[in-house]
Image (tube, rainbow over all chains, first blue to last red):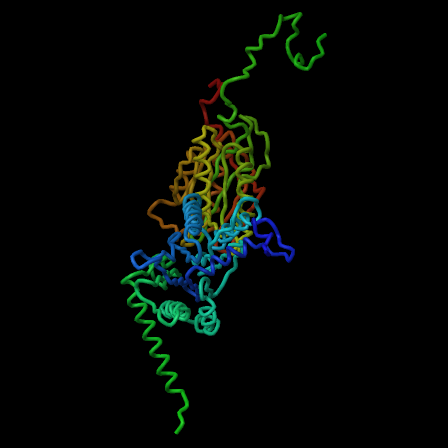
Amino acid sequence: MFRNNYDNDAVTFSPQGRIFQVEYAQEAVKQGSVVVGLVNKTHAVLVGLKRNAEELSSYQKKIIEIDSHMGIAIAGLASDARVLSNFMKQQSLGSRMTYGRPLPVDRIVSQIGDRAQTNTQHYGKRPYGVGLLVAGVDAGGPHLFEFQPSGMTQEMVACAIGARSQMARTYLERNLEKIAGSTRDELITHGLQALKETLSQDKELTVDNTSVGVVGLAPEGARGRIESFKLYEGQLLVPLLDALERSEAGEETKEAETMEVDS
Amino acid sequence: MNHFPEAWGRPRDDVYGPYNPSYLQTTGPKTHTQSPAVTGSSILGIKFNGGCVLASDNLASYGSLARFTDVKRLRKFGDTALVGFSGDISDMQYIDRLLDSIDIRENYSAHGNTLNAKNLHTYLSKVLYKRRSEFNPLWNHILVAGFDDDKKPFLSSADLLGTTFSAPHLATGFGAHLALPILRRLFPEERPIEEISKDEAVAALRECLKVLWYRDARSLDKYTIAVITAQGIEIQEDQQVEAQSWAFAETIKGYGAQVN
């Protein structure tokens, strides 16, 4: 029987130049429930769909605050994400301790990227089975980064990873210009809308299965330079989901008005 | 004659008897880091409307010997901060290398160097505190000048124990005794920093350096003065103490052999 000889460890290339263990790790990301991230000029938003393993269990955490200026959304092995998030929290705290400065987002992203890459080049190690979206603000404004188990990181204006995330990416691509010029609340609604696109027919967004994280620059005249990372879960989501419903209703009436009707 | 190297420079056995090696301390704690060797004297600093000035002379003394007369003890960090060092010169050079490596690391990131003077002062105070906690202090007293997170002028000091102190005008070494009273008289607490101009601040520090040259035996009449404003950093090296008047010297009595 045919057997793949090139996927026993993460250090061996296949003759086609692929590293199967890394690809399998990326498959683990695709199995995780979807998370969406997007930025405009002032804010970065993370939105995630939470899954519960069984009726009686609680929902899996999808968004983690790293520091007051940064948070991550995870897709894939949650336990690997905890290792990475603990590392990120330590680094953030270290930066505040030694320099009195919040850690720049690109700095921590390249650090976890380097760690993940190391795992793909050492015998006896395995890649992280998790993909991350890192959202935060620093001196350069709001940022969103994508992180993959291969160690690849890149800055994004909008991104979605996890199961059925293609639908969300399609939505984000179609609405890129609207997102760029949106307000804080519109940005959240776009995130929720993108998330909703990924749902199968019989599912909908509820206060139990949705998670939203927002971080950004503080509005003019506010105390402090940044609006700290805030996680919306449970009842806090009600106004956000209502806003989503209202915007959908608005879109539909607009469509109905412009639709040509046979007379 | 004994040609073995271990005998070089030692009293001859046939004349003085065998050398007593117990005089050569081979065990026990290291002590050479517990006092400075080549030292720099005062650093002066003052805040004014829109920036800070630091000043120091160009002397590095070896004990009471004026050993090196062109040592620059002020440095800039990127274009965001000025650092002035008094105390041990070799420790200054070590910290200088630390700062260089941080500067390089910072400039690799996407947005360049985002460390301001306040961040730098926090870092340096932690370095100094760590070293004193290891009983191996960096023998320096440092002034950091620049801007804080709110883009307001920032001036603060950190010493070899990791103690930090901040004030509108600061001085280390002998300057703390000779220059600070002058600066406090010129710029009393009631006078807000916004009323102090750059020229006034620079002139005050030049005057203080002259007083130090008159009265601090470990000082020099060649000095460096550096200004940091929102527009950038301006360092003037090889300045000379002008308009000296030693007339007062004749009235000084009580130091050393005097007949009348």
